[in-house]
Length: 254
Image (cartoon, rainbow, N blue to C red; front, side):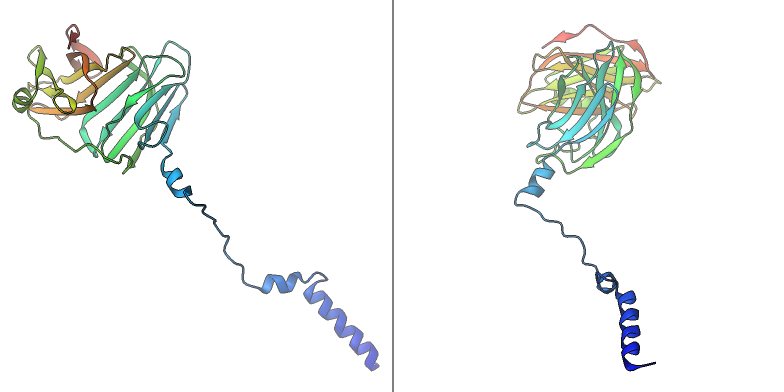
């Protein structure tokens, strides 16, 4: 083989190894990780977005003060005979369940700005008092800039002493509230029995949002909800056996 032919053969082998566009050489180079560019203010705006869960007919969200849905809210997304609600627990405590019923109709959003450091919530649909559909639970934390404090050691006796107004039904369920600095409502289980004490009430003169506190921790305990500067409009104490209403009273006006 002549020297010229040897040179041509070597060049051909090299071309096959490298590729005509140098792809083999490029593949041999280490790959750089993809760059994530963050523009000024991008992190803050991301934090302002509410955390939401959805089912067909309802959208529930927990958002910071700077979002379009501050606190905990629920939107009715379907025009039907059911109404949307959000069910939630606060501070990781399962002894008190809160429910906000949105009675305003399709496209309307209702809720409460006062939430705790940890909120576990889900969207639901109700027909009257009966829940007919619900979604999965979601837990968020550190959303509110000024979260409400956990207050789970209030007894019925302490509730009577602290509150401005109290009402009871069948000597078993008691609803109390006060509006001195920040409005709050307490639902207390007074008697040791199989029934569950609840408070049902409206705030701020709005008849399209019904609030509910379900006290699940048993006799001698109270569950609390806060409402900031809003006044309590109507209230009553209610007694349930599971999902069945066994005792209530007419709403009282404040």
